[in-house]
Length: 293
Image (cartoon, rainbow, N blue to C red; front, side, top):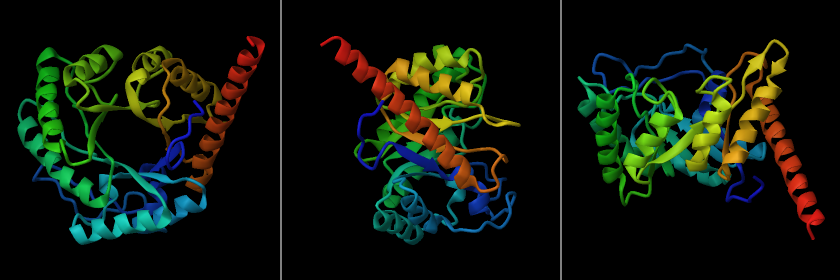
């Protein structure tokens, strides 16, 4: 788990800093929904374009951006954001598309077309990946097949763009490894997996994560919190599941708790936890190699 990666092993999602960033813009394929500025988390204290420098100052050089944190979809703004990333030495790892449902019987075609419209935006802003929702409907054969068809087409439209389409073990369509693996098998490597440590529930999730994380290219390393702070036992078992699966990709630090007033404190605590886990893993491996020589 200690393999070196360009720009380091850690990323941060803008969701982890939603109080710092404040306003959201809920872009949607539904014409009845408004993308006007809303402030459910307050007015914020920093703009998105300032975030790359704040990351770099904390030794993190990968960023994932939720679509609803983009204050503008104009090419000029996206280009400015790309410039801020480059100036700070921060890689735009993933643009996280937060709406759309290619498994829905009545609007899958509309939503898939809307998703495809984000590929060019991902290109302009310099994102390596575009994470889309595989589906929100129950995991029936019909709904899974519908999602598979539209995701195949989405991957075809992204081909040659330099943007990789990825899905996540998220929402009702993918409640277990059985559906997740079926979908990935059907996509034949044309769509990647962003595994999320917090989207499935314990105690089954540890074995389930070990089942799918061998196929993951990215990982949302979300930690649970309780009254005492970070749930270390749960986080450790999630990381062990990743290790058992041979996952070697980056960890995107997902902090989603009111435990710390300053969200950076929660983010950096999780980073330290993973680093210490990796150090123990490396020490154990080296000790084992030494004993066998």
